[in-house]
Structure formats: C-alpha cells, structure tokens
Amino acid sequence: MNTDMTIVLAAAAALLSGLGVLWWLSKRLIKPGIVRTLIRMSGLATVVLIAVTGGLTLMRSQTQAAAATTTTPLVSERATAELGTLTVTLDAVGNLEPGDTQALTFGASAPVTEVLVSVGDTVHAGDVLARVDTTDLEANLRDAELSLAKAQASLDALLAPATELEIAAAEANITLVQAQLYSASQGGSSDADVEIARLQEELARNQLWQSQINRDMRVAQEEARGGGVNWLEQQEFDSSVAQAENSVTLAETDFQDTLTDGPSGSSLASANASVASAERRLEELQAGPSETDLRRAQIAVESAQLEVDSARQALDDATLTAPFDGIVADENLIVGVVPLANSAITLIDTSRYTLNLSVAESDVINVAVGQPVDLAVQAVNDTPVTGTITRLDVSPTQSGQLIAYAAEVTVNPTADVPLRPGMSATATITLEAYENVLLLPNRFIETDATTGQTVVQIEPAPDVYTALPVTLGARNAEESEITSGLSAGQTVVLLARETSTTTQQGGLGLGILGGGGQRPPDGFQPPAGGFQGGGGGFAGPGG
Image (cartoon, rainbow, N blue to C red; front, side, top):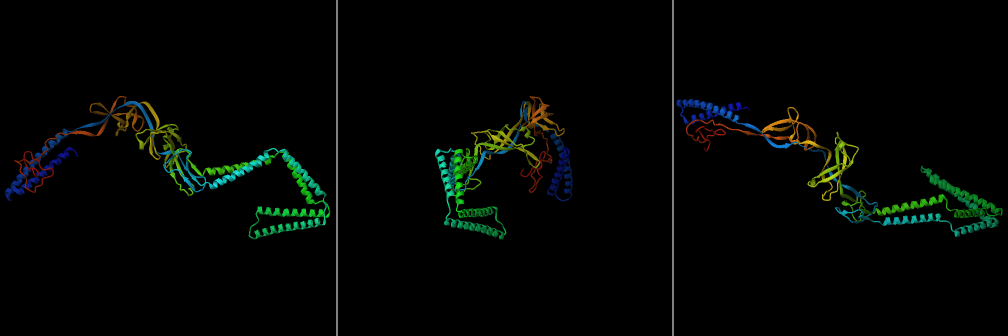
C-alpha cells in the first residue's frame, strides 16, 4: 500500500470516529426537541471541521515521516582475495570393516569336547580355540600307517639285491622240482590207479554239469523277473564252466594215461610247471625286479601315503586354531554336541581396517590405486585418520541410471585411535591441487538475477557497494578460483538481507479539540488505540 492511500484511509477513519462521538453526545447530553437538533447540526459541523483538520495534520505528519526514512545496507562480513592453493576433493561415506573375517569350522563331524574361548576374547595366530572327539580319527590314522608300512616293505624287498643265500635256495629248489619231474615220468599205473583215475574223470564231468545247470538256472530266473544277468555275473558263470571243462579234459587225459600204464599226465604237467616257476624265480633274483613290478609297488606306497595324509589331516581338523591375531566375534559350540557345519567360531582381524567406497563415473578417472585418503571417523572426530586406496574395480556397478565403481581404502595403522568394526567414516580423496591461484570463499560469490553474471560485492567508497563481475575457475566446497575480474588484495563484502531504517515521526494526533478533558460516562468504549486530543478532550478508560 502506497503513502497516499495510507493518508486517505487515516482521514476517513478520523471522520468516522468524530461522527460517532458527536452522535453519542447528542443522545446523552441534549434534551429532545429543536435545541437538540440545532446542537446536533452544530456538532456535525464541528466534527467535519475536526476531521478536515485531523486529515491535514495526518497528511503533514506522514509526509514528514516518509522524508525522514533512510535505508542503509548492512555489511555482515568482509574478505580479501588472496593467492593460495585450491584443493579439489571427492567425499564418500562408508563403514569400517575388519581387515579379515573368517568363519572357522571343524573338518570332522564329532561331538565337541572342549571350548577354550568366548566372544570378545583376543587370540593370537596358532592358539587352540576348541576341539572335538578324536577316537575314530586316531584309529583311522593307525590303520593307514600300517598299510603304508606294508606297502613300503614290499617295495624295499623289490629294490633290495638278491643275497647269495636266496640264489642258493632258488638253485636248490630247481634241483628238487627236476627230481620230482623225473620221478613222475618213471612211474606206472596199478588197478587202483586206473579206478581212481576213472572216478576222477566222472567227478569232473559231474562238476561240469553242475556248473552248467547253475548258470542256466540263474539266467532263467533273471529272465523270468524281466531282467538279465549283469556282465560281472556272466563272467563268473563262464569262468566257472570253463574251469570245469578244463578239469574234465585233464581227468580224461589222466585216465587214458593210467590205462596205458605210463606216467601220469597230470603229475608230469604239475612237475613241469614247478620246474618252470623255480627257474623263473632264479632269473628274477639274478636280474632284479621288472619295471612293471617296480612301478606297481611304488603306486601302492603312494596310495598308502595319501591315506595316511588324509587321516592325519582329519585328525588335525578336529582342533580349531586361530589362523591370525584377532578377536572372537561369534561362537556357536556346546560341549557334547556335534557342531554346525557352516560356522563354529568367527574370528575378525582388528589390526587393520578397510573402507568400501562407491566412486561416480565422472570422478573415477581422477582416482587411482595408491592415492592417499583422509578419513573423518564420526566416533573419533578430533583424531586424524588416514588411508590409501588399495583396490579400484575395473567393472562398474549400475543402479538405475547411476554408474559407479567400487574402491577399497585400507586404513593406515593407528594405535592411538580406538576404531571398531562398523564405524561410519567419510573419506576425502584429493583429486587435484591448483597452486598460486586467486581464491575467494564461496559465500561471497553470487549470481546477478538480471544479467546472470557471477558477481561479488565490493565497496569502492564508504557505504557505497557495487556488484563486480568475475570469472570462476576450479571450485571446491569452501572456496573458488577467481580467474578474472578481481585482483589479489581487493576486499569484497557480504551484505546482509536486512537493512537499517531510521524514521522521524511528526504529530499524528487527530484529537477532538475542546476544553479540559472529561472522563466519558461508564460503558463508553473508544476505538482501538483510544482518542488522542491535541490539548484536552477525552482520555481512554481509566485516564
């Protein structure tokens, strides 16, 4: 609302107030009739005069007040443009994670016999944490060790050269079997020998028939069930029948040899086989083991050694030991109960911490492994913590339209800072540093709403302020580089939004002119603010 409108409204309010007072007086103080009417008319004229006079007085007062009002900007802060180093950084937030976390489990399924730690305990690498029952595991290890010893003895016997006593024994055995062969070739047959040979032939034929019947019956049973004889059973049946057939052939030969009163064919065959075996044994002793026999014995030893190693490892796995220095974070063991397969004891390494960060694609080109990082850990704000980027993923992660790259920061060891897993921290990575540039705090830089230019406020003369256009270079969260428009040493000001206003007021009273003021009758309520007379008139209630 402008000044003229304010004056008009004030005059109108004064006029209405005067009419109201005069009407009330006419009803209270003047008798009915003509005299009252005349007084009312004269009162109306008086009120009009008072209103006009009050309006003029109000207009004069408002004009004087407007002329006495001045506005002066307030300077809240001053700053000087100076040369310095501008550091551009990247901030990212994450949580501290232990350098290593391992869920330890037993390699054997057996009841727990001993638990030596609790949650929160500090342990060192190699410390025993818990054990399970090892009775069966120890027995398995003993059996495996015996098998290994037997295989090793066989290999050693093959590798050892033949002694003179072994060779002499082999030669003597050859002489013996040769004598047996000669005796078999010189013998004749009696009637008893003939009958025995015949009975042996008949017995061999019966065994052949039995083998054939067993085979045929089994095949018939399997076919009746809708299946068939598997390959292994078929091989066994065929082998049994073939052996029985050979026995029949040999028995027939012996029977015929007995009838001709010559030497026994089976005896001759057995004696010849014995001679051949004795001679082969002597050759082996003299030549040593073959490559095949030697390799077979070596494989047996290697297989037995693997069994021993497996049994020993299973026994070792029955005891949980700490793989590194750390703190027990979780323990799920009960003595006498078989432990869970997924996790028995969880151990964390608190000697070092890492921080996983997410770097935007626009910043990742300025980030590299080995860059130093400043950390602000909320729980220990006053203590400096530093770190180094130790991993930067090549493959990005995408969330909606945002593409980022995971980076890992390894916190430098700080014995004086009580860090704990899960603490939140803000990592500040230095991306670039601009040296010897003109700097100004960001709060002194603004954008002109009319021209759109970047400006700063300067004070060329006392209480005179001018917007000076400037050009910006690199920026960070606190300050910016001024590339043009401002010189080193110049002072800029920050103007407050509020202004200082000084007003000198003239007489604003409208008052009802009259003699000495009288108190209005009881029940009279003046307008808000009351009436104010120039030299008397009515006072407010209680005045």
